[in-house]
Length: 354
Image (cartoon, rainbow, N blue to C red; front, side, top):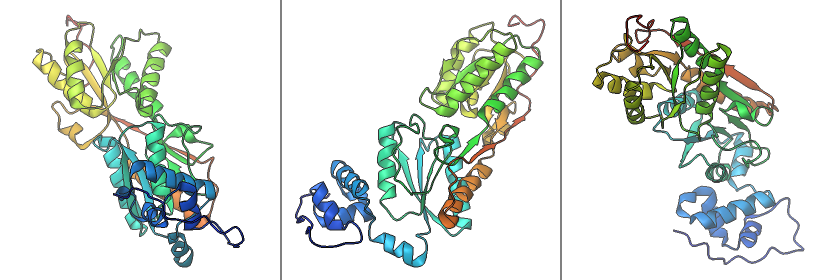
């Protein structure tokens, strides 16, 4: 691993250049030119602290690696940078898959970084690593806790974010989380349930927070009490653990789960408690993953069109890359659909849980 030892001499003050050189970056960062080159071509072989120092120097000086000359000569690197978080989650993995497929249709490859946490620092570091490599533009799938004020993005780099909070700052493609949640909660209330309990996603997830807020607002608007939500981590295991406490509460007749995997865990908890879906408890999920229709009973859920989301992200990015359009105010809200299956029904009047 490169230790970043400096062998570079300061740039000659009398020498005229059209722009900053690799030597300028090396001098500012206190490293060798070889290290600067390695950060541009193979950053994983450079120590993180050294890499951050070099990337900061590149940004400060406005330096573009020599690979930029190739892009000017041939018109494009034909590579898209992609930042995601928690690829183990079904929604993220399906969106990434859709982006890769859409990019391939346009003749582009994808350079992916899966950040360890949704913190602004981790996302910023991932952005820096990709922006100093040979990419034409950047797609960020859910910036999560990062905000337009905290997310540091290089100027002039085409960017698209799958997060409606960045509208006005960067082009955004977002799922209509609010409408999807309203459809789910309204469906359960219209069936006759007095209220709807909620298995929420983690606090560091923007979609989870949007679904939680929409669930609460929908109940309040309908004049219903909003029970205390239970927080999961998107996994079936967390749905199961939280579902065990829900199964013990005779007041619970309907549950809206923030994703399908937690709904699957809830199914198991209810069954182990001797309760049936939907006779005793109605369950609605979110995402419509392939597993949803194969659960028993098949799960009522809010369907997201991940294929369309990936296609729109790539199309919007390439509009900026190829046509040099300023699309900062562009926002596309992708509609969702409630898919009603067999996991929801009216509460039984004779049930001790009504």
